[in-house]
Amino acid sequence: MAAAFLPEESMALTQALQNQLPEKWRAGLQVFDRIDSTNLEAARQLESDPQLPLLLVASAQTAGIGRRGRTFVSPAATGLYWTAVFTLPAATPQGLVTPAAGVALQAAVTSALDVPTQLKWVNDLINASGKVAGILAQAASGNCPHLIVGIGINLAPDPKRQLAAPGQPIGSLLPAIPDDATKAALVAQWAAHFDSLLRQAHLIMPAFRAHAAWLGELVTLSEPAHVTVGRLVGFADDGAIILDTANGEQQFHDGTLRRR
Image (tube, rainbow, N blue to C red):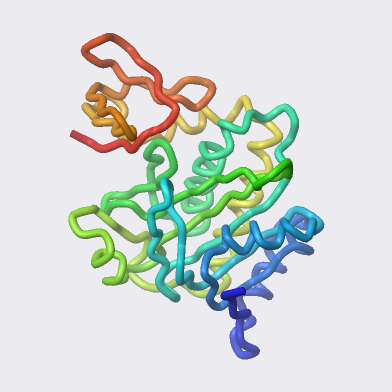
């Protein structure tokens, strides 16, 4: 297991999280100084049928994972990375998990950091400086009914990120690294918002629409075998994006969105 728990002298984040997290997440909290990937570690731990929910939090990842197998650059200290493992409420469609995680993250950033952000469909949080967070939701392997949701957030500037993604607008939320109490507040408030949304699925997409980026703008949606150009006009109740294209309005459930 490529993981290193926080050293004795750096337990402030662990204690701050225990103090601030909703009670249901405290027993399954694990904090790492460094790990290959919190999502990978979550998958490993699910093999032993642990008590859920789990919440794995790391200050650095050496092999962070993005969508479509891309690398998510996760440098130490300037970012924060966490994964929640849970069983989805029966009434909540799995397709709304990523939008729910995004809405919860946008709300947590606003309340904990007082920083305005928007949601870029399908799984990014952006601000004026560029992409500041990514979300990766995965179903557990085999017949396991649980879900794994990973969050990677760029707290402060770090040249390692830009070197890893030349030409892409990679941003950060703050000019400097926040203290552990602020980091804990961000994770705790995300967990509280996320729990609430999963219990009230009808609130997810209205909240997503209220904070969505690029509404009304021309965009390009790239899928593995096709590229679509259109105007972003909205989002369906099942989480699909709606584009007004040369062939009329079309809905899509996957793809990479770029502004024209």
